[in-house]
Amino acid sequence: MTGRRSFLAALALVLIEGIAYASPPVQLTFDGRVKRGAVFVPSGDEIVFAVRETSPSLVLKRLKIADGTVTRLHPQAGLPETNATFAADGKTYAYLELTGNDAVVVHISDVKHTRNDVLKFSQPIPWDPCITPDGKAVVVSLDGQIVRRDLGSNAEQALTKSAGSNNWPHVSPDGRAVVFCSSRHGDYELYTIGVDGGAERRLTESPGMDGHPSWSPDGRKIAFTSTRDGQYEIYVIDADGSNPRRVTHHPERDDFAAWHSDGQKLLIVSERDGRQDLYLVEVPQ
Image (cartoon, rainbow, N blue to C red; front, side, top):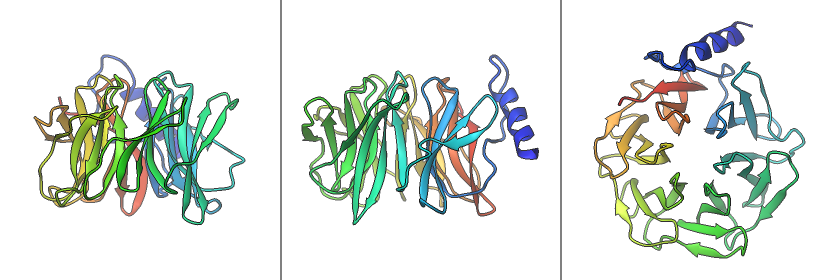
């Protein structure tokens, strides 16, 4: 019960409108297991994240903000699953299922579980799916390039055609652009490109890796993970690549930033004493 009381106390502090948010990170989970790709459901009342289990080895779970309860998103799933991503209305979502034999499929589902479309791509391992805000397309990393898949026609369009590896795409809230990371010039840096292709723009140029980008709800900022200062930390830049600022300051790994709908807080996976849990951190303005 100690963890539950801590969760409720933390949420009472950070979710009341108009208060000055606590500066220290606020812990939301307490199991310490390996996690990745946590996101807020657009309504803001739940978090969905992938966590390491015994069987299957990776499952999607949902955390209810109201009381801190954690349950399986797909209780009957027998294969590893990860990387949930929601359309803006919160009704449609995509996620990855690892089917074995070096193959991955993308599921397109709805929250009422009346739809479950399984997408197979031209290459066997699509990765890092991001469903567009209107729910009509999904953007993935496929064979080192960023690819858009239209859910009506099932047509694939390669948005990038560069050297190196392009991955972790995230579509802007207005549905017009994609931010992603690319190793085309050596280490991973951040770039943007139109959701239908078009001119690319480089956003970062730093030592180490810049990756796992995430647009803010208003589209004006991008959060990302970087090793530019020697360890995995969370940073925020303006959408044009300017005004970089560091969000986290911790000797272990901070990763997988996702925005709260208020645009003032980030949900992250943070490692503390070798344990990984979800935390809320305040974004410097």
